[in-house]
Length: 210
Ligand SMILES: C[S@@+](CC[C@H](N)C(=O)[O-])C[C@H]1O[C@@H](n2cnc3c(N)ncnc32)[C@H](O)[C@@H]1O
Image 1: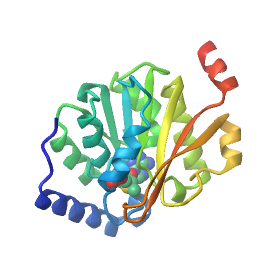
Image 2: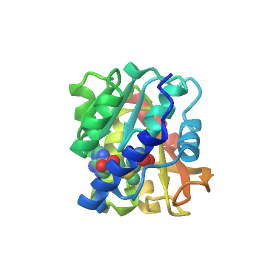
Image 3: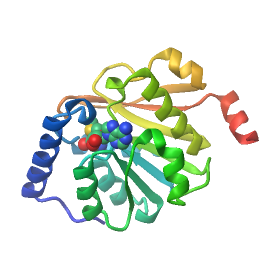
Image 4: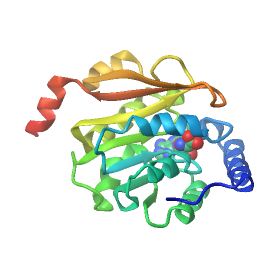
């Protein structure tokens, strides 16, 4: 178990997060870290028995902590964060997990360099990225890398402040992905919806044959 958070810890995390938002609002994409209800709903979408998991855009580690508290082993968790200050913070908070300062669109090479897994061996990806604000090219490159490293039946769990999935239908069709709605975190500020992306059955067969 990780240590319970004191109110001064969550206050200093909120301040660290807000400072990063002031420097780069588009990339941080939220004024404050996600709340416990959203973290619980994201973690609840992990497939039964999931062990090897990647987190993208971890911020101050709200989802990281919840996943570790729910049985994901730190050595089986790869955390990728682009912002250097947040990366340094995550590294000190989760010294036994694999924490990397990097870009989610380079996930295939990060996974290989860190020898975290071979392609197609990851059970699930939990994403806190602000996908909705990203260009189509960046969305495409992140989702391609993500599904490169996921198992054929693996899933990509994402939250968004929009009531609709944060990726356009035509992009999902291009990648052969389907999406289903997960929970709704009404206590989060702002309220957020969880969506779960996975390969269509024909894409799963293709991935198995690779
Ligand atoms: C909306 S915040 C979510 C933070 C945390 N998951 C939470 O829910 O509190 C988005 C996070 O994604 C990170 N980020 C943005 N673009 C990224 C990228 N291309 N690769 C990795 N991390 C990225 C930001 O630095 C920020 O920490």
